[in-house]
Image (cartoon, rainbow, N blue to C red; front, side, top):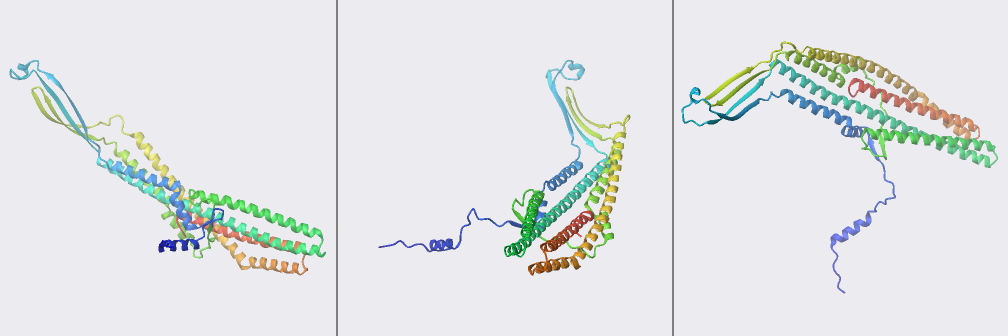
Length: 425
């Protein structure tokens, strides 16, 4: 019997499809794992505060365009039919039309005082520079918030890991106790104590899981939901930089911090606005030209309009601008003092946390681990009681928690120090 040949492409497709097993909808998928730089990039790209700062830049760009614009001219005209009533006296010859269309057109161009225009433009430029510094300030603060939320979540993960490790240790102890109770080597009360300890350990795990979920939502909120509900993070706590100079950080904060730059530009803008109000006492003049066509008359005229500031010379606007300048100068001074205080405080906090970490790493961690190992070995050999093992386990877990907390405190202090200094250390 004749068979239709099967195309080679179809054979290859069927063969490859047998090698690929489709993923069932019920199968759990691995969560996405994000690093800190990736999360910061997502936050800077999606968080609404960044969009708001970018909108402020566009607004100031519009103000700069408006400040550079010249006043528009004005055109005025009218027209109508005119009747000849007294041709002789008007110098019109007999036989001329009895009526004619009359009209006139006037064009006026305001001329702005050059010093006032220059002050307004410089104020707009300072406003734009302040908005750009405001964007950098927003990005700096948002990155610091993301880092702190990241380390909160990292600490929560570490807390959960230690809680689960504690459960595993207590379960091992419980199995040994149950075996001894069955063999009659230990009273039933020991088994009850071990069961209670296991229940407590499981409750700690439940609280740690809840705390982890809360911190995961907080970090996801800073990225405007870019991370999703099921994700994981990877990273380590920060280490203390040994060459950290307090004087250099303080000088950098006062010279390069985006907040200082933004407020300095606002002071410049207020100063230029004050200059603009002072120069605005000189009124704008309007140069005009007209063409008139009337019965028996045609004329070209020129004019100059000069407002006279006789009764009021913008005293209120000048005083208001002067007050705004003083307010911005005071805000700049306050920010400088606040940054100096923050730099000194967070520098001391990070140094204290680093010293505590050294204490843990140079002795406490090893001593606690060794004490737990000896207690577990002695308990297995029957030379130690259940209470001794549980005490050694509590001490070891508490030291690990305190060590993780010290690492967290150091990371938070360094992040705050970065924010106070105006950038990475």
